[in-house]
Image (tube, rainbow, N blue to C red; front, side):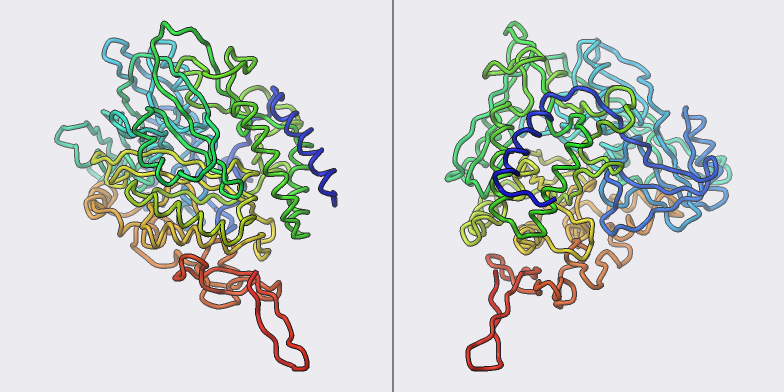
Length: 600
């Protein structure tokens, strides 16, 4: 489907209007599919593909519905020396965290561990099972006049998954933006000795004898065992006031170091190719301030499958034709619609009437409309649902310490000055989201210093050997973040390259590994992937033809790119130590058989 730029623009405007008014839904499918009852299973994530596009296999899956069921499952597998991994209902991690080693492992799903056990309004403590979703947590807490102050923005995560990957919201205030900051107790089921019945339940408490174990369990990558229950310390329910302010990005590098300290829930959305930035001015206000605002982010709403088909097909056509101008026009239109629509904020749950939008925390902290409602035969879907032809993307997400964020942003701006249209494609995925993360001593694998988290989502081809437009620029940003600025990868996102050497950046990594050895000395909850990211074995980089295009390696030879399509391995434009896949045109010199290469 080849669309001229004017026709493409009209379609984008029409389709974006449809997206912002769509209210029905078709929930995501189960990430685990077995051919024989609960055996012979394939396991995937919510996007339908891991970074290396391999199939994740498991011999069996089990769905415990109580801690006793969980103990029995772990004991049986431990006695048989069987590898285990934990899966959640929606399986939103991009890396292969869910995959057990080999084909004969056991996957333990927490889907049925979904009960809120106790809420004590007076103490503000809430105890829940590890499969409870963020949406459930928020709803149940609010019914009792309580709130978790900082969370990710997507409803579909579970409390166990949040802790396994160190997920967070955005703040530099209070105890910090990571969910693990609010965990005061945890029960975990791990392999045991024969005298333990082959399974052991660990009760971990903050500031107690098990405090060191708790610091490992708060961000564990699932290698210690299965979280059974979590107790959180909540706050009284409160109101927030939100205003999105759009400016040019001239002073962005200076603003990032101060903006997060000026507003409690501050975040920043940046559109580098447009030289435009949107500041989220977001603070608590008195409950007496009127307002019943609601946040229903368009990117998380159910979208008609036909709309997703046309959007994806349009972007594929732009990539195939090298239609940079078309991509920039579509990106500009997308961001204009989002900004005009206040990113899904409404003053009363129905209509956006103007800023500020004031409402209770439970209505403004997260959203996920595509999770709600009955199945509708595929008429609608979450935008990334692999059952339909919709979004298919890479995510590169990392935290840069706040003291280095200014220089990093300026380096990106230098890249944009060299290739002004190179990051237009990000605008189709709502630019670069920057959230503030507080340094903490509460988790060995958590953030070590106050940092700025950069969340970058961008086009991924269905063909692993097909390069993107401006392939080199995003590769350079990725390598610049990880290698030049020492960025820490988000454990639940990213391509393989971002995890290279990551564990060496954590000052308390050895303490984490000691707890891992204590809880699971046989490594039954470890997998090839976790061993690689924890530095226990090699193989994180998968060096083969075209590997750099998928972030499986940093190119060192042209064959790692796409030489037959003109993409060769070259140095970065700003970060010269980077090795990136650059489009190079070969031009023959007049009256000679020789030729010269010109980088695009």
